[in-house]
Length: 375
Ligand code: ADP
Image (cartoon, rainbow, N blue to C red; front, side, top):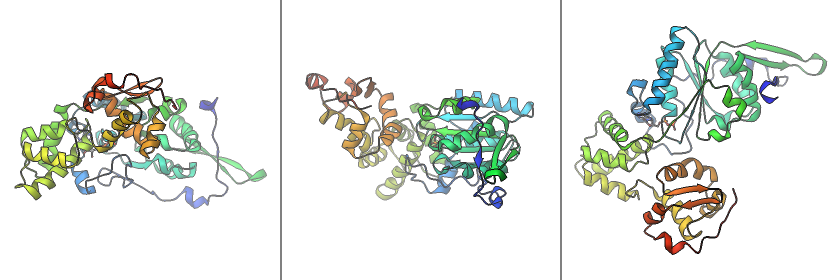
């Protein structure tokens, strides 16, 4: 069975020095990864992003249930002087997966954290230095863990379960297996696509948490707090307006705050009032529900080209000249959550609210519904 398979990795072509190579990446909260998250372009310069990112779980707004459960596990692990179980965090981009992952080492008493990204883990040799250099109870954070190659994933099984890896050195009759005992560590995986994580990998995470969109009140607190940290003067109703138009996502709220600050500096006296926020967001093409031009193009295509649906995601992606992953990771979750869109076995359809948001009447499209299915 796959889950019990012993995965050996052949190291005959890898110089032994590589196995002992010095720590490639040692990232603590002071030096976070420079691997960009492709899903939402970072607008903040890294130092501003760092200033805004909470460093302790008590500073995080919202996601209280997740934070409370993690706090219990962390406290228990510390009390028993054990290594915290592996953690899988999933949810749409910008909701705080990396923030949780960077807070956890602090909560564990300042243990080191190493960070990498599934997209660059192409073969087991890419992960070996992280595993062999991990210190006892340190944290290894793999962002976008669903993008890891299958061979890396299988190689991780024994590392996660028994803190051991098996390397094959040499070739043919000279080949021998080297069992390396690792120091117990905590793996934190983050993914926007939990469906792409295989069952054997998923089952090796003792703690699995899903991050959901934030409420308006929570986002308004984040906007006000971020404004405070960046010395921006903002009125309460303006903070609420930015929160309301940020698709339930802290990263978007922070990015939109920054744009509104620029607008306020350029066009007003630097103070963000409700009218300044409204004008600035309108100039970005953000509508009253917080949808950006890409969201609107997605909905508009389903309406104009496919009569409101049902239509497969791949077909929409081809029409928009976008990757289906971009649509399913970044665009769809909030539209589904806002009840503007629904997923049916036959494909994506606009809801009545979706039709009305686009200024049309669903009755006008009732007869032209031709199912277009491809996924
Ligand atoms: P993800 O890893 O899920 O894509 P991040 O953890 O990078 O998202 O979060 C993006 C930004 O949003 C962070 O830099 C931080 O400023 C802000 N943020 C995320 N979650 C919270 C939260 N719970 N409270 C306050 N700010 C948050």
